[in-house]
Amino acid sequence: MSISDPLISTKTVPAVGDKKIAKTAGYYLAFTALGMVSASLGPTLPGLAEHTQTELRDISYLFTARSLGYLIGSLLAGRLYDRLPGHPVIAITLLIIALTMALTPLVPLLWLLIAVLLAMGMAEGLVDVGGNTLLVWTHRDKVGPYMNALHFFFGAGAFLAPIIIAQTVKMSGDINWAYWTLALLIFPISLWVLSLPSPRGHIASEDSPAGPANYMLVVLIILFFFLYVGAEVSFGGWVFTYAVALNLTNETVAAYLTSAFWGALTMGRLIAIPIAMRLRPRYMLLGDLLGCLASVGIILFWYESLTAMWVGALGLGFSMASVFPTTLNLAERRMPISGRVMSWFFVGASIGGMFLPWLIGQLFDTIGPYMVMLVILIDLAVMLAIFFVLINQSTRNLAPDEVGV
Image 1 (cartoon, rainbow, N blue to C red):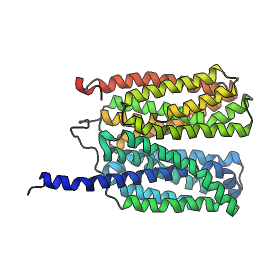
Image 2 (image 1 turned 180 degrees about the vertical axis):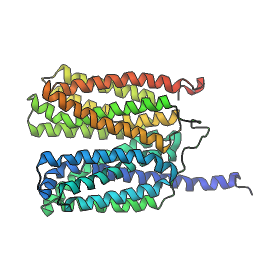
Image 3 (image 1 turned 60 degrees about the vertical axis):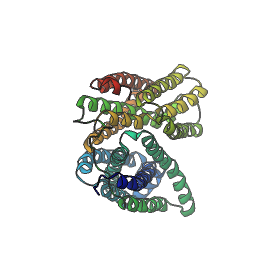
Image 4 (image 1 turned 90 degrees about the vertical axis):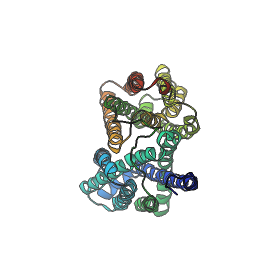
């Protein structure tokens, strides 16, 4: 009996399906851990300043160190995932994250803590690129709903982290156990991922695009991610200061406003899972971008209204929710996704997340708080223009019966 015998094939299908489910669960757990780590620094910043005996303006360099590490990790990720089995790489980087989390509250010197956060950021970049890449390799052209779910779990982790930190600090009186608890939660996830076989890299098939990547399309998607992440991080990072500076509300309500934006983004990713099963990526992206522009437009048009601020923040969160995973889904349908290509996507996203918030900070001080929403609106308008160019470029070489995919 040959290896291609239908009887053998049908008997192995359930096992293959079970392995896919187990792998997908591993990526979801890894991204929950990634979300918890990403959201842990802000609430513990005053405690880390106290541990290192530094002022808050100096301890804020930890954000820069982690972002720089993330950028380096994203650059390294492509070569690693294209050359090595993916699961051991993710498992080892999760262990590095757990170790650096455990060390963070124990480091008494700022320069040494910066080095620890740099290493943590590198590991985060490797896990982020790896989770997205391996999920695409596991589900291929059916990755849409799974990708939205992956990013939902990241948001769930980011939501859980402040709660875990608040409770552990309340019980222990210090941030040490907050970090140690998160580190202990990450450790078994690395073992789970390590126990599973790694998916194979990009392979041409009847259901996936063949040939080399379209470099113009890669550049357009990198630029698209640069603008998207810049807008997301800028709104999430500046909406508190914007609302307070314009006397729309007090600091407590402004904090709730920020939480509402991230909460809407997380819930939007959950809602996007069934939608991604029925709607083509380009139509989802067009609806998302129009919703984003409308939401920021509401905030700018009724700039003195707190109600408009709430409507705009919630609308922007829901509209932004599926942009990143849907763009990855679109890319998978149009070209082979290697680890190297995926890493460049995340490099663009990382640079956007660093540059646009910095630019807004410069304009905020020199021109005024209105520049926050104006810059984000211009950013989103450029995104919409790039989207149409991207769609045109991605369908140029397709056969007529493939254009609707």
